[in-house]
Length: 355
Image 1 (spheres, one colour):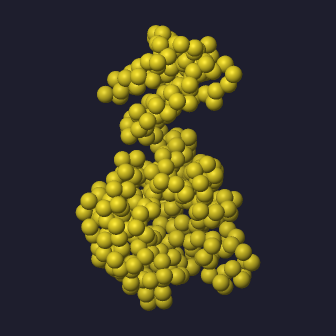
Image 2 (image 1 turned 120 degrees about the vertical axis):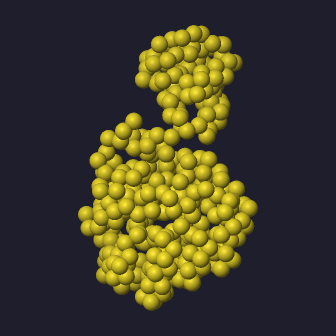
Image 3 (image 1 turned 180 degrees about the vertical axis):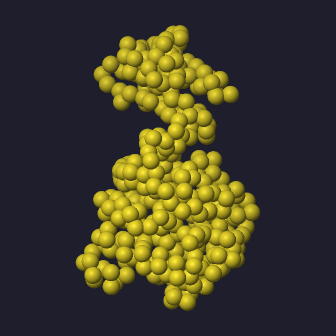
C-alpha cells in the first residue's frame, strides 16, 4: 500500500548498501547490547535482528579490541554495521579500518578540529557515511550557558556547528540526529532543523524507557515527525531485547501507512461477552506468524456476534464463542470451527494465502 504522507526531500546518502534520504524507504535501525568484543554473541544478536527486519545495526566501540572485532563480525552478517564512537577519534579510524559501513560520532567530544578532519577524511576514503549525533544530555557548555537548558534551539545550534565543520571539509555524506528523552523537545528540535538543512535525519527519542513507556514515547515522538514528512531512518530505543525495538519500529511505520512488514493482527480488548481465552489465542497465532514478511490483515475477535462486522476489512479472521468459533474472510463467514482448532485453522489459512 502506498504511503499517504508527503515526505520532505533530503539528500541521498548510503549506509553500506542501504539508501538513506531522497525518498528512499524509511530504514529501520537497532543497536546491539552485547559486548562487541564477544564476536559470537554479537553475531547471533545481529542475525536475530536481521530476521526481525532490522536493516542497519549499530555497535558500541569502547576500545581497540571492539574495533578489531568488527572485521570478524561483518564477515558473518549481511546488514550494514555502524560503529558508535565516543571521546576517542582513534577508535573511529580503527573501526573504519575494520570495515565499518558508517560511524556515529559527536564531533564535539572526539577530539580537536584536526582529529575530526582525520575521521572525515578516513570516512571519505572508505566510502563510509557518518551520523552527527546531538544529544540533549551532552551539549557544549557554552551552548547550555547561552540557552540555560537543552532547548530545541540549543540542540539545533549544536548540530549546525558540526554541519558547518563537515561542510568546511567538503564532506556531505552524513545524516543528523537530535535526541532528547523529552518528547516535545525532540519533536520541536527536528522540526526546526528540517527547516534549516536538507541532510537526511535519523529520528529517535533517547533513553525512552521500558517496553510500554518507551513504545509510547517513541510512537508519539517518532510518529509525529514521520506523519509530518520528517525523517529518513530511525531507531526505537527500549530497555529491552533489541528485537523488540525492530517490532515496534515496523508497527509505527504500519500505523502511518509508510511501510508494511509482517501480518497485522487486529484483536479486540475483550469484555464481559468474551467466552474464550483470547489472550492465549492471539499469542499463539502471533508466535506462529513471527518472521513472515507478507502483511495480511488478520482479525482475532472474542465475540461471534460482532466479530466479523467489526473486523470486516480484515483479509481473514476468527471470532470465538463458548466451545466454538467462526472463520471469516472480508466479513463473510466461511465455516464454524471448534474452539480448540481455531488457532490451527487460522494459521493454516493464512499460510495458504501467502504462498
